[in-house]
Amino acid sequence: MASPRGARSVARIVRAASRVFGRRGYDGASMNDVAREAGVSKGLLHYHFRSKEDLLLEAQRATFRELHRRFAERAQRGDRGLPAALDALDAMWRSIRELRGGAPFIVETLAMASHQGELNERLGTFYDESTQLLEDAIRLVFVDELDQLAVTPDRMAVLIRVLLEGLTIELARCHSAEDAARVDQAYLDFRELFERFVLDQRPLGPAGTEELGPMPLPW
Image 1 (tube, rainbow, N blue to C red):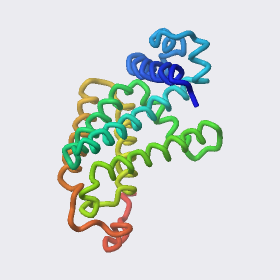
Image 2 (spheres, rainbow, N blue to C red):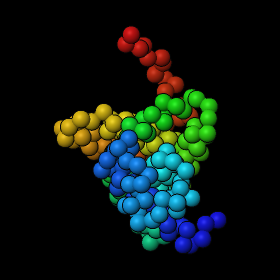
Image 3 (cartoon, rainbow, N blue to C red):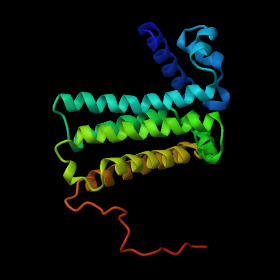
Image 4 (cartoon, rainbow, N blue to C red):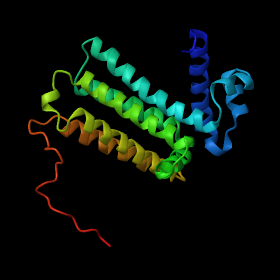
């Protein structure tokens, strides 16, 4: 386990990496850039993180941990329910937007999900942890309304994570302010749907599509 001083160094490095990736993009940023931004030596940076891949995955992991922390703190204060959930979602979206420069790498790692290798194993661990943190946060904030959720917390966590991954892919495709504005609007549309339908007295069944039958593909 890292010492308190080591933990502070890691947190400072991760925050610096988020800023550098956001300004320069993943390809344009270097480990030296991050070390300078964080005010640490390159040796200390490499002691904690072996590569830019590790840094970017940790920056994403920090976003999910921060979201969970906010949920937990608000729930302990008695601030629960839909308003608290919406505030936390907004905070997560702001964090993702700040990491926009890393979006192409995130897309690349998604494409590698079916491959074997150390990076894919780390990515799988990240997905498992982030989904569990989301599920725990949903249970905390909706603790008094769990029986009213439209889908169960575990399934809702997967939906939120997949939606955020999709928005990240859209960010990677942005070439102008107008493109970015369209992605922001897509988030706002999701937020409105979440607000309208997250609580429902008639939850979906195990799959939610049994009566719909197969849908033909357009090709």
